[in-house]
Length: 219
Ligand SMILES: C[S@@+](CC[C@H](N)C(=O)[O-])C[C@H]1O[C@@H](n2cnc3c(N)ncnc32)[C@H](O)[C@@H]1O
Image (cartoon, rainbow, N blue to C red; front, side, top):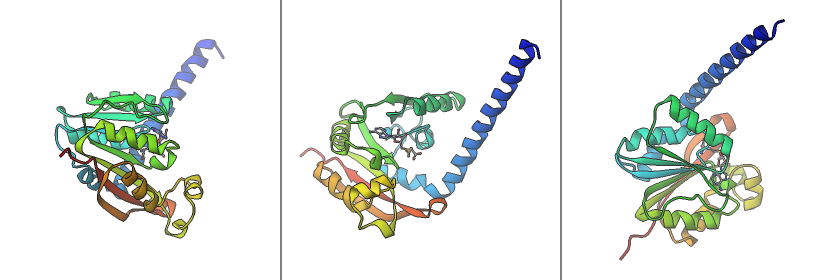
């Protein structure tokens, strides 16, 4: 086969794969909309039009994209992740959907690299259990939030492993609410609400809980 034909075939195959992966992601996100209850996450964050928020551990942006719509053109979403490839996929998604109010941040494992005292809310979904340096991350969240700003954490857990050690649960990509409640309190946050369970992940046979906390207001 001529080199031109080979190249043309390769282009057709790559285009088909890209189109398929695009549709596959759209379908995955639409399916997730049916159980994730992101509007309830946004109300726990107290998201308003014009809010400045961060999605830490955003991966390719399922929640970031939805937050961008909720805060509108006057608002800003920081999509934060330590994984450069995930951020590339986020940037591609933002380009394709013509979203311009998201700032992609390639962060460090112990620092989300967010600006000080400007955030109305930070959300962490299915990522907190991956933070090895969770104490440092919580300290940075406190610095990045405005007084009264919200921190909302949504994580998977399983009733049957609730009594296991933190390490054992994290190894299974889960963490029980009681560990995080204590860690968030110790970091200096006030608890606003805790829902356990919050939603069911039928496809994984487990549940997710939701914790909303607040940076104390200045006296
Ligand atoms: C299971 S994914 C969840 C992605 C997204 N929140 C969602 O629910 O679709 C966890 C993400 O957290 C990111 N992550 C892990 N540790 C992190 C850290 N210390 N700071 C920022 N992101 C982190 C990973 O790179 C990964 O993209």
